Image (cartoon, rainbow, N blue to C red; front, top):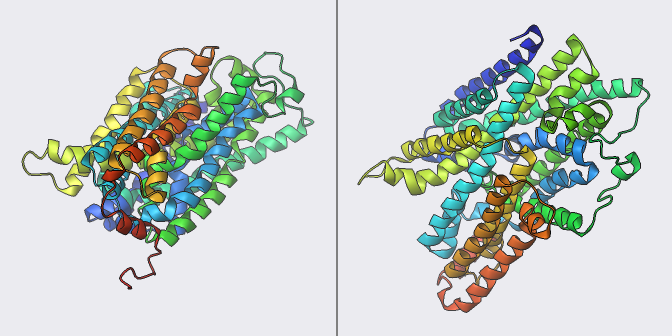
Length: 511
């Protein structure tokens, strides 16, 4: 390792040490299965909002947005807009009723609402697949970061982050990770904000040049400044499909949903969501500015096809010398925190459903493993599989891969949660049919997109962003099949709906 990489190496070591130290300190609070799964439902809105911000702001947010703006321009701002607005939809439709359901996981909610083990099993499968699809780019982003800043082989980051996540999650579960993720949100915000202040001073000192075409395609600055500039019908479709995926996919992400089970009650869940909106809005002001500055100073990064490393390399390009290395170390620390916090949240969400539905029986023989032992066995599977995929699958743009995870979540869990919470006519047969249609459609699109280069025809475009057709298909299927099987509506649906929509302070036993 050369001398210039020493600050970045120290930054990674310090973030790792702080993560393990906070997790170890929080171990004294983790004693029961409820502590491991949902922190005993005792996390207040302020702490929970910071923790959600920590786990939600992933590699796609920290690195991917700036890279997309660098290459594609301001139409890529739909990503942060959608990722933030998704919490508004979550606040209005899902947050409080989901907490009142008393469930530990989405699978629990599905079984409670519909009384079907088949729906529960399918939900477990989808949670695992979405979690793995989301974890893989986190590990790949870690490999890119260590390769760019330290000169380490790419596989190093793809192995180190999973090991750290396993150490923390196995030890303390949700209770421990809550404190770690809250710390990491503020670290990520600081790691972007402080270098950006210096870079903006340099930009103004250079005479404030305007963004230019970083890709060499001849796009003018004026055209770049207009959203959907030069877009045809395919461009409009891609944009609206992205909006559907990000607006509706947030409520279906397993690591997001599980966080609302940790609130004491529905009112706290709503307050948490409002605080999250503010924290995300503050953070997402920063990555697009890195992308705009990259259009001035980092055209070579775009042309080399390494747009995801823009945030990591821009400080060195704009501020050569020791100060640039210190700024690079700071953004490296933030990027590493992003991988750790998001991966930890996903590991807990996937381990929770695996521990309840798979590992407890598979490894326990006739006698089920205890709740904590099953959770830990599930956690190993939840982390090791995407780690192997990250090593085996060629790198995919982190924002692109995460966007596909949003499309799958929007096509499956969004219809299930919205109809399950707000329509008493939903049946188990309807839910199964809708989950299969939405999951199969969006899943096939994911496999095609990851396995083939982008094409120009309508078929290729619709598979690159499937949400615009897969989400309506899932909703319509759930509704139509439920109407056709209305005799199968659960007999206790009235009691369940009252529980979902009645504030905790209102007694339910009144005449």
